[in-house]
Image (tube, rainbow, N blue to C red; front, side, top):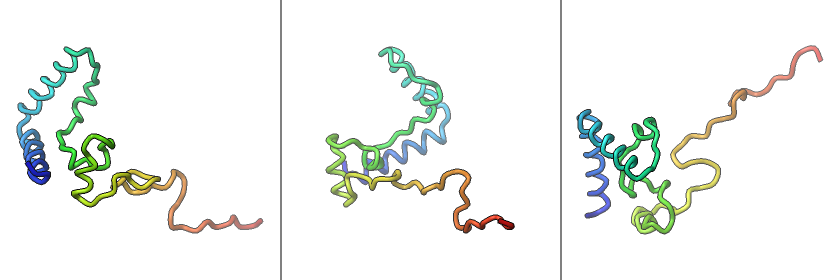
Length: 109
């Protein structure tokens, strides 16, 4: 199966789970049961946010040495994201700073 076929199938599965609430609930219940049987605690909030994906969709998340290097090479993407911020996330200025506005000294001093 090619990377593109895997990505397409994962997207179709996510759509089916989004459209079919019962399928989603049954899947989450089965996952919850597996974690419980193996004494692995998982919070309901985390369980509810899990998303099905294939490594080709998670290039920035895949750990080195797990086959992701081959996928990155196929897509021509670097294996290590640039330092300073997460890939695909905008840079947000720290709170309390007006970006794009020059600071004006107070009058009268």
